[in-house]
Length: 150
Image (cartoon, rainbow, N blue to C red; front, side, top):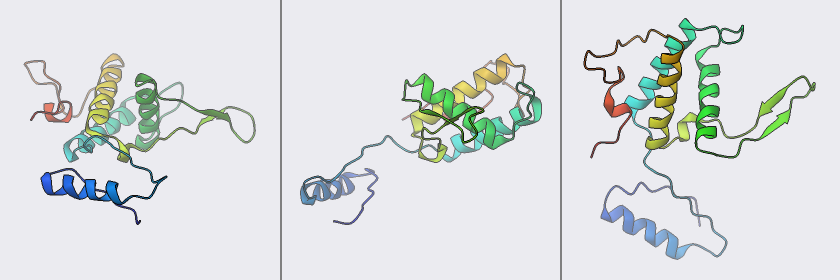
């Protein structure tokens, strides 16, 4: 059996996924994930990481957006109680987190949580966000980036 990815967007696709499961050989693997992050969430994340990169020096280091992303993916994994795997680096002067660090694989809900962590951290550090907070105290990032409204 070849590799298949099916987004369960309608009954026809759900049926197709069931067909693949029924035809799968013993030992085949099936993975279920929540809906993918949205484009709005992705844009909000990069805007917030850019604001952090411009605003903060973290423990003597000015981090670029990629480094900040890794810091917050690590925080998200810890928040979700995911297994964190640290191993010594090759010259034994520190450690490397070898846990999964890809933001592109985050679900919509995980991305919502990540944006919440970034916003809370930045607020605590006094970051001035590029999108000012609305007067009604809702998050500056569009609420759709935080919540899944159906």
